Image 1 (cartoon, helix red, strand yellow):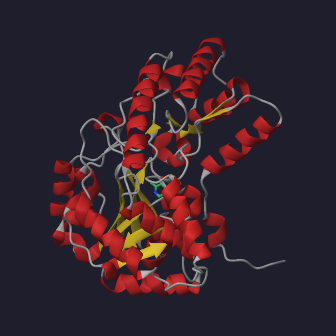
Image 2 (cartoon, rainbow, N blue to C red):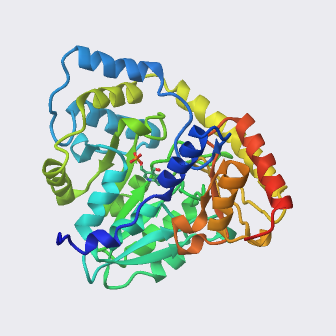
Length: 393
Ligand code: PLP
């Protein structure tokens, strides 16, 4: 009998990957499946980015790099932040990592242990809670409420901080809801955090370029008062359609930077070199593909929300960011997970049940609109037929 550690059994996962596998298996059997499950852009990585990786390999850039990333890429991240948000970040605070997810993994490992509390958004990206559980820390859900546009409430978030709280995880624009927290609320939250100087903040801003309706993304980096305890999670996956490249970046404050670098040395060593050159081309090259992609997501967002609000028993607040809709399905009579399962099996539409994103996700499902308008319209029609013809299980 192998004697593995108990923590492994506390770890969760992302059901979106399981749904993707089931949808692909059904498609392989010849079923016509529309996938609105997984959260990744349906666009190709722009050509000039791909070419940069190919060139890097041809130029012999295939060895290890520094664990924290090639200096020219760290400089490009800092320059990009300055250009987009007028914030000053030193390249020495930037760490290149194999995906944005690695930042939440490392941050949770740095702060989580039995006796510690970690606050995270619920509904939220499932890995936050999974990793908190793994470390033995107590997961404290911060409710993301529909009536609040699925944004953070500063007052409610601050009210959950205890002397045991070590880390507060923020995410705006948010997965799975598309919620964007308004600047006034972030201002209030940062102000309130003055009373809790030993609480670290991890701000997951991986969807920072995907905001709509004239919203401007507010980065937590623009608050100097918390910069010495702010971890910023970001990366190339969503903005440049590079999910499979595994490329992300983070800002780590003070001594956390060295801890993160050591965790890298002890696990993955460094990010693969050609991907780093691709990331450089992405940041320094033309941005028109990004703008085109975001404009297309915006068009689809309107189609999805309009269509969802016409379905029997379904209502959907308009998401202000990311590429997800999180409709309320409470009046359909269905529970979220049985509905998501039946929708895939019977109607051939892959969606994710809200409870896969937290305790407060019951009564909701997540649709990713990273699919063509044609498929989205077809999916909505199938969902409508399903809801009118099938009895709730
Ligand atoms: N953070 C959020 C909120 C996400 O939705 C995702 C991916 O779905 C990530 C982080 C992880 O990004 P990456 O693929 O770069 O690891």
